[in-house]
Each structure stands twice: as structure tokens, then as C-alpha cells.
Image 1 (cartoon, rainbow over the protein chains, first blue to last red):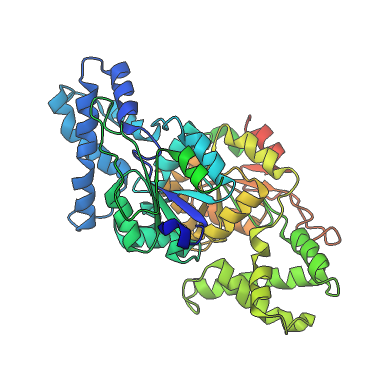
Image 2 (image 1 turned 90 degrees about the vertical axis):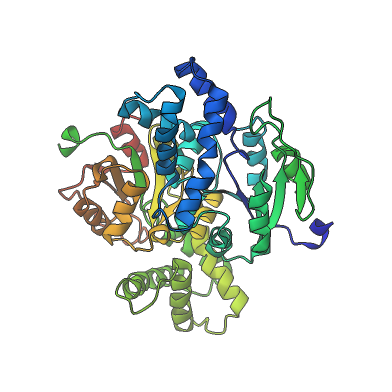
Length: 236
Length: 236
């Protein structure tokens, strides 16, 4: 309903972890290959679980500005002993930490982005740092028009400065920007700043064994199954 | 010679105006189409000539931080009366100012970047703002891996913060980054920060009637005819 009265957006800004790429499945596969003795499912969840509190420490000033690469590494160092990998040497830790640079896209992501790119400016708006997002795009073939990140605005989502930063960069009103994400909290942050929002169902974000509730919530401009569905809805 | 002892760079950062795109020819063509009564050659040169002093005012603090779009517009407003276009209405000025978002690439640029992209991270490092560079890339088919700009670092080249910013984003030593540019002053700024440098000959930057001296100067890692030559030299 809301979509009918709102203008067509000009820029689509995408959340990345969970929305564009499958962090859980990617880490699971990499762990199975490198450390088959470890419960990769529990490992992936533990690593990701440290993310929110770590970012919160940056947001509230307990930690100074720090890239996600550094936050991922702090969390990794913390969980390795719990999984019997406390002995892992430095170079191996650094290499494992880069798994976040090579996460695999969801099956519809590349094709969907290619369709959306024909009509809109498409950019990530992720808390991931620029290098991480750039390496990921190169590795996965994500056809971004540019790479925006919390790092550009020195503000982690859901800080309004991140959402409004995208509109400011393109000198657009907030409603000319649409945030695309699989997380309601992220979309709520964007909506509070006046952006349009598209929710993307990613029922397997936490693994096939742990289906996520993806039922529609009010307030979003669109509720879509995946990026192809979003492209369809936006007339691409 | 220097190239033999330096490591292969990982990131190639490109100056854009004059190096990747032909600002003079593009503005000339657009003026011929829209305002055939105006001397497009003189107009393009006058517009570009205001660029350096305007940026200098930002660098020395006379002007606060301002995007190139705004600087281009200030210069445009200044020169329009000189060319008998002082009556131009606001919407038309805004539209003409966007010519910088749709500059045409040099004939070798897209093919060269595609080759270089296979082996290196390729990014602009331009004083142009993010939106300008993003629209330009979309319009011209420039296959950047990400879009870095003075706007990200809030520092205009040749401020060291711009060159070192690229190395910092990728957590690389400066010598793992190579600046590619058609201007010796830009390359000198990068070299002073420890970056590798590649000079690109663009003899027609100021128009076919005004050939630029493109003879080699010492100090650059490479001196190349164009991007295809650079790709060749870098083994792509």
C-alpha cells in the first residue's frame, strides 16, 4: 500500500551479512574443510554472536573506532579455545578471519543485483569494512555500483548517520533511498530516518536446521522472497 | 628499473579526470550539441581552469569541505556570463553541471581496466565525489571494484591523507598500492607517500589542437602509453 504513494527510489542500499551472502553456510563449509573435528555450525553461530556486542562497544565508546575485520578477529581469538583451537598460530588466525571476505552469495543474489543494477544505483550499506566488502564483491561477482560502508560514515548501523549518509552522498531525500535487508531492526533504523525499506526473507540465515521466522511485519515498503522477487516488484 | 625491485602492487588507484575519462572532448561535444553558438573548447578549458584554485580554497580552509559537484557549479556560475550564457535558468545549470557525471572514457580505458581487474583491486582515487564517480562508472561501464574518493578521506589530493587513505583501507603498506595518473604533480604526491606510480600518456587531454608534453620524467615505476600498455607491463 505504502509503495503506491511513495516515489520510485533511485538508490538501493543493501545490508550484506545474511541479506546478500550466507555467512552461516560459508563458515560451515570452510570449517568442515579446514577443521573437520570442530562443530562448524556452533562455531559459525558463536562467531556471529559476538558481533552485536562488539559493535555495541564501538557505538557506546568503550572501544574506539574499529573495523569489522578487527572486531571479527577479537571475537575469533575469544572463541578459538572453546573449540579446542586455542593453539592456532597467528598466520592461520589471520587467514581464517578472512573467511568473511569470501562469503558465498545466496543463489538469487548475483542475478537479482544484475537486474536491479539496470535501473537503480546499487550499493552495499554494511557494517563490514570497505576492504572486506570489496574483496567479497570481487570473489562473489557482486556487481555493486560503488561500495558504501559504515567505514565511510564512521557510524555503525543502526546509527542514523549511516542511513542518512547514503542519501547525503547522492544528494537525495531519504525516501529516494531504499534499504534492502533481512533484519527488521536494520529496516526499522532506516525507516526512522525516512528511507524506504524492503524486507528479504532469508529463512536459512542461521542454518537449515534453525529456520528463521520470516513472516511479514508492518511498516516495510516491500516484503520479498528474494532479490528476484524484489526486481519483479520494482519493475526490473 | 625501479619496478624490478619493488613488490607487485595489490591495489591500483586511478586518477580519473584526464586519466580515465576525456573531460575536454566530452564537454566539447556536449556544448556543441546544446549551445553550438559557444566556443566549446574555450568553455571546457575555462571550466577546468577554475578547478585547481577552487580546490586550493578548500585545502587552505577558505572554503569549508565541499564536494566537486559544488565546486564545479561555483565555477560554472562564474564563467557562464563570459560566454553569453548568464541568463541560463537554475534547472539547466544543474543539468549542465552534471556533464562531469557523464564524461566519456578514453578508448582504451574500459578494456584496460577489465584486464587489470582480473589481477588487481582497481579503484578510482579521484577528487571527484562518490556520486559523480558512481554515476560516471555506471554510464561509461568502468568496472571498479569499489569507489574511493577524496570524499571518503575528506582530503583532496595531493594531501597525503588521500594517498595513504587507500593503503589504510586495505591495510597495506604504501608500496603495495600504485597510483595511475596522467599528471606528474599527482604522481609526485603519491610517490612522496611511498606509493608506486604509473604515468599514463594522455597527449590530447587539452584537445587535439593543444598536444601535451608526455615525455617521461624520472621517478615513476612505469611510464605507459595507455591502460593496455600498463596491463601488458603488469603481466595481465
